[in-house]
Length: 442
Ligand SMILES: Cc1cc2nc3c(=O)[nH]c(=O)nc-3n(C[C@H](O)[C@H](O)[C@H](O)COP(=O)(O)OP(=O)(O)OC[C@H]3O[C@@H](n4cnc5c(N)ncnc54)[C@H](O)[C@@H]3O)c2cc1C
Image 1: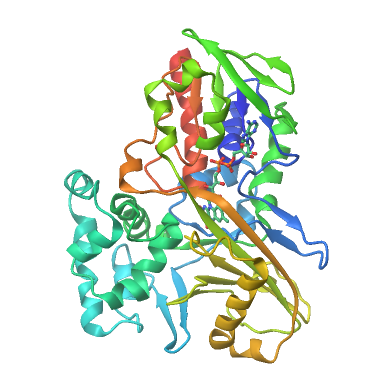
Image 2: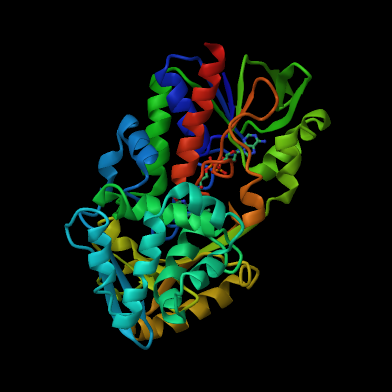
């Protein structure tokens, strides 16, 4: 079995295949595995830095299973009850704090006590609750063509509810503007998080760098299972004809296998398919996909400027602030913060120094201790193609695991996982691709 791509979807497929005893060759173009999920040591401070802070959730059941298999589940902490602290430059702070009640009462207990919203507007949140509890089949078709803004409008959500609650959840999970992204995917995210088990809504917070949590343990597991991993191995062509893929061309060599799993992003797949494959109905649509960027600013201050482990920021360019020193258990005088800006297409091309200035300006209002502190180091990471943009027109074009080419199977966060481009979708897609391979072999 041959897997192209060593991001989380490729690793998930490799873990699944090897646990079923299959022999696997995994080809990854970069010198390291992890794809859009990786961490590295910062040269100046020696601290672990993620390419972008990732937040996982209790409802990431596939991811939690993957972490159990590769033996790293203990490196992320699941909140006992959902808690998100919000801060606002003018209004101060508030928290979404859920009580230990069965779902969905736990979320209700948090929402009804959320002080960023007036009491009358908190009651209007119940309308979203009734939508989530309605029969999925009816809602799914109703929401298929709507954007998040259109749905929230239909559900009578006032400006305050959007600005101080829904937008931060929607932008964080769908990574594009709420006027563009699919209401259907947002509805599924809310359902997955707020219904079912109480812990589905809890955040699963990594206590180590992303590579240490999701990548290195997987690599170790795969090596023990005899999986051959080749890094610096770029697939230049996927060749074949009517009977399917014959070989992939990698560093001028032809690699052959019985079945192939593509675990590369849509834009990469487009560029390696031979022309006859490009016209396969599910693959011909790849040109309609577009990506949306995420910017992460890693800032080191000479002193402690923030006490909380992380906060969501309302009404500002920066949407989340993570206190990396606390999360990674670093005990030093200085402090490392990671600031996240999703749906960043309007500002992604600004110079990095300008982005740092914008962030510092906002921080001086949000975290007053930064006013006296000295910024000792900064690192700005722009992931221009962080995720595909989940606009309603594209959602229906996401291909399933079958590519239409007999022995080529598709994985990746952009395939039809039912969810936005997330770690959970990536892990799920890898496992589903393997199930499909085995179902055809039976
Ligand atoms: C900044 C940022 C923040 C994010 N935050 C979150 C979050 O908070 N929560 C969450 O759930 N998700 C988050 N995500 C999304 C998550 O990281 C992705 O959904 C997931 O990593 C996608 O994995 P993948 O395997 O589908 O694709 P990728 O990670 O893109 O993996 C594909 C791999 O294929 C390789 N490849 C490409 N072309 C070839 C070729 N021709 N030959 C060989 N190899 C090739 C690439 O090098 C790459 O390693 C975030 C993403 C970013 C960028």
